[in-house]
Length: 379
Image (cartoon, rainbow, N blue to C red):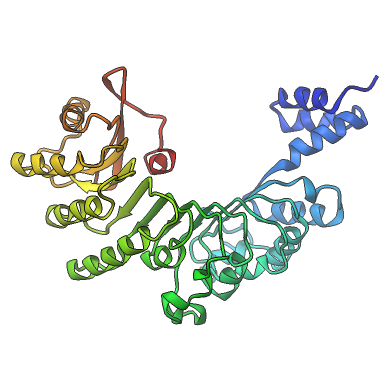
């Protein structure tokens, strides 16, 4: 007796074990189709030898690649194999099979319906592997990577017309594509990345290239220069680019290598003024919370001008004693909420460790499940 495809898919959805899903492939043709979709829809490649075997399977079985919608390739934390773990070997890439990237490249070219792709490299690995994307015809919705920002990566991005969520960790000023001025960069053209909405990058130059004339609403970046005059210059360019977005900005996360009270007192007013008189920001941070009471009142007075603010991150590393207890953080969150009643999520950061407090029915509670690094994406 044959069931509808929806029934088969519903049954498979209730099976948690991948081994059991594999068993369903042998029950009937109907279950085989539903089970194969479940098995190959989302793939994680973390063990190099198994990844090569999976890539070979995708290359040898034409019916599998079109089923792949999401793929994560992660080589973080990779360890040397026993035969390579001798004193003469100090390169973590030696644990990769010699044909690893060639197999991955062939598999990527066959996954024509891929929509979500993440590529994370291991420490010490050559980041110039964007060539594996050459010849790929899929149109991504999300792309996260820490590959080198080179000509191959720029060429790939220039052909992604559906991409809305982009995270790139690198930017190389010495690459031939990036030596041209920002205004003439090939990715600055209006028809490139027309749907980009979420942008996360480690260098403000990428913001200046990708935000203008695109519907970018969420941005995470950081200052690349440690000196205050340099950060002022970068901030001015950033704000000019952010104001050029075709959509109202909702989240802005600008990190710094060293957080100072004095620069934060410049940073926040410039952010508020840049998006006045009707600021749409729902998240802004990290911001240094002043220790001095009068300065803190001025800080709250400026912050409350962001009338739609829902969440913020407060840096409290300079506080002595540090507000590390729940009672201390709750008191500060309540104080902030008194002046900025729209805020219901506060992240307290100290020495790069974060705690999330969330207001539920008027009561502040520690949220152990929410990841602080993702709050700017969720507002």
